[in-house]
Image 1 (spheres, one colour):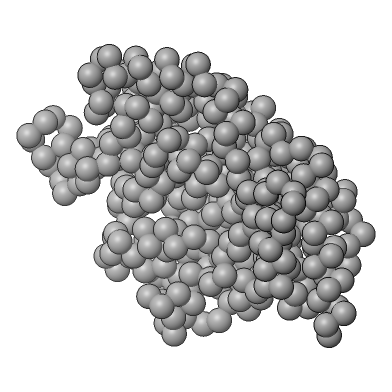
Image 2: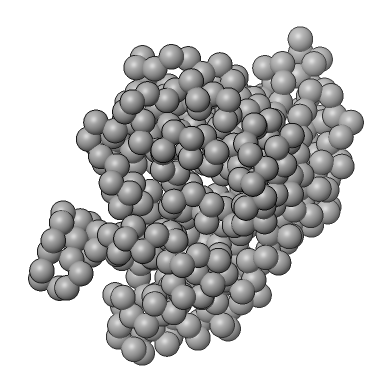
Length: 392
């Protein structure tokens, strides 16, 4: 391979642009000696709450803990059912199981990759207590319909925003095929994902749109009681040290990570717009490639991943060809959650998710990815499909 490799993600340009600020922030924490729950944690919580437009932001040590603690703070536990998508990373369902509840899988919309509101209603039982939509790849789920269903059935909504920091909900009723009341839709148009349901859960894993330099997570809520419980749960179930009231967790965001996130937060909208421009360029260059379905440039989508569908069973060959050409790509996700060994055989089939698992391929994307490299990726996809067709 004579050409420079193109990774699926390159974080170096981002670091280079903020190097002095990041090093100063880290040095400040090192000098302070306050590595656990230092001042930067509280300041980050205040700043991120203001950015998201939520009353409460509770920093924790991972996106998975954000889901677990968010569920516990909502009172979800043994005997309860939580409806979610089969097409997501395992942490989604794992968090439900780890609080003692049962994940119930409702199939997804093939265009958005997100949970289909029409499939949710059929899964509701007397044991259903919550819906957990995932804003997959940074694309907001059909929240107007989901909120409307939740309100009609007295259910809680916890949003998995691991991939959607900075995304906003703009979809109309016709776009998401829901039958919600206009007042429901109007009330949430333009809101940040994670601030629409009862609880939002975010990840700051380094690869995320807003990424730390280690693990990190965040819980959001406008409910004072839920927020108070979440704050207790992250420090061993105590409001006051050594006065533990409930069984909790050791789930605090490190001060160092909070300091790094504070440097990055003011740039998130610019970075997300950069991702949208990369996605737009991909869509334009792939428009005439037969056998490839490109994602919709939905309003509010922040493209944590740029994920195409490759039809006719060609996905794995394209993936291998790109790898051979030094081009990174990822399959998110090759096995739906309900088909993983821990759950396999316990649920009815979800045919859309099962099909997508054989078709999806996520291409290189980061805000600074240039046109030449995008064009090289697209040309490699063309070549891979030509070679595949010749071998038929």
